[in-house]
Image (cartoon, rainbow over all chains, first blue to last red):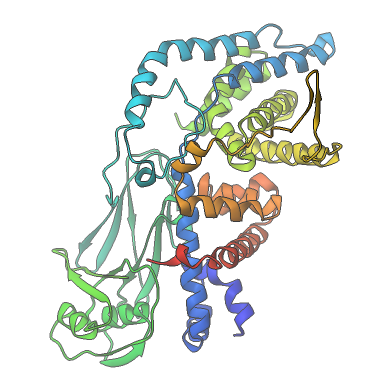
Length: 289
Length: 196
């Protein structure tokens, strides 16, 4: 696979949408080129920055409802009489908007003055207009990951606490629900482990889950990027692995002689910048960078 | 009742002449419409104009809305088209040199130009990275920018974007990838952005 073709697949790979064969070719191409690895790391960082746009607070000017109503009335007046099916009705839209402004104005004044005391850099907010009819939300706790995994024997499922209207994407597929909590079974009927990408908030929260296959591998030694290591670990020990690393670094070498997955991961990560953690449910969490 | 069913109900009622339902539909989506329009224009006045024009188009086309698409994806399509039309009109307008002096009763004065991006105080409120991304986004062609905003800021799925822009999903994916590659290239020139 040439460099140009590899770049064409950056998004699909990052979102976990590549077929296994193509994914292997992509990874081989990435492994062969440090320059491309750097580009992909930058691409991932860029993707993350783009996801933060959703956090930008854009406040609606108080004249918006009035402007819409005025334009609609002009459009309605321009229509033949028989088609003027909303005569006079749009004033209510504008007045309704203004009434809402009046109702929440004082409350918003309080909230605005409170919001000005917060660190805007930390909050990542842009103040454009004050929006008087939407009371400011209470500050959200930082670094709360709304994703949890339930491991029950060989069954793994993802539990997502829905917040705002952020979309959960699993393996590139958007999962929507009106429920407050979404449960997604992560099934793998293949003999070997598979990677599944999990993404929330347009990539702001992004991780990879490696779900073990139905068979255990005999191989104990190998080299590859951290995601390949995670698959090897899952194949060898039959444990699910959660990858929360922000970039793929230089290839690792491993030799699985330890009696369990956690010890094996710790041994492989010595002086690499990655770290492994074992959760109560048996899942291995790899983080770093 | 799901949001989509509620929209369909409001649309059906509006199609039968219930103006309260149309007003409700507008009130329900005007904030979201404005936020998207503002992200496209980065100018509050222009964004309000785009939204107002878009709802006029909704009003005119509502009798023909069949409910095959979600109301929201239809609205995004209309908003995008309104924005592109605004851009075309802007580019056709006669331009005046910003260096040219303005004639006043008290003689010639230097032209004062309003910065649509807000005051220096507003600028300070933005993170450096966010500003770099915003600047880079402005260099993209309009259609790429609208796709990037739909996916990353509006958090629409590829399917919804394809429906909104009436494009095959594969085209949406490849164009979005190209847009992200372009942004990466622009942003990589500033090494600070990618420092952890």
